[in-house]
Length: 349
Image (cartoon, rainbow, N blue to C red):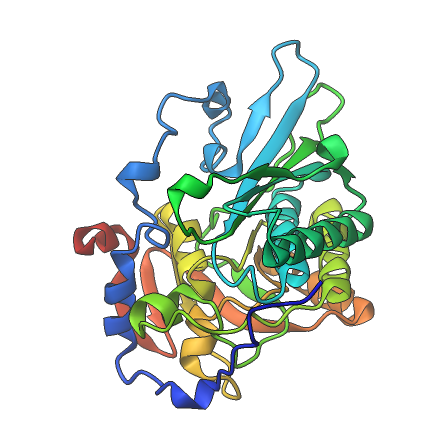
């Protein structure tokens, strides 16, 4: 089937490196997708009986206890509303990978995935191209992540009377949570845990700001290609993460998601009121390093006593990693410059 949308030409060199990182942070903070404090999306208060476990971020993790006492399940939903027409197969693989990466970071075992295509006219040539590509992408991702596909079909939602709408793909991933002999939940939550814990970035760093919220909302550029992505590397990264969790070498783990590394760390620090002191990679643009949303990256915190075992394992696994810095009592520092304290961030929203 013929692709109707031409490939997007984009050169990161056309985007100036920002001189004031704090101005970028404050500009993006008003975006509800990025801010750690979001009134409109906060349904967590009083919604879970798991808070009795005194966990800082159980509700953030999408974990639910089965009524019959049979254990715990995990669920996460992700969507892509732009660039789907450019490469639907890659877009679907990215979306399933994002959901899987998030679930793995919490210690869950992904089991099944379902998908919904919105605003796709399946009687149109381009609609067929998108649907076919999405189908292949979901099948590819399900195979490498050992996922079952719910209903074995993609559900469509299209009403011509609504006019032209942006094609949107939504995937929902369901997983199971491991429990101990007494059926207590064993969960690796995304919240930073303790001042002094070392922070590492697992995965590859690159000059990639494509399809990022930073590029779209700060620079006003909506046309860019999909971010860098390698499905096989994703598998390797997640296998290493699962092994590290099983070995008990991680204190917390989180995927680099919306807003890039900075906002992913900010959301994790917000949960326990902790900050971070990090150093960016000299060979990577600072805006790409902090706000880029390229795939295949996970940040983890490690207790000092376990750092040697953690580093040795990654060397043996041949998984690239970068030493970011450490958890602070609340201050946020980047390259030896202070950006304030995490408990004051909400005052700027």
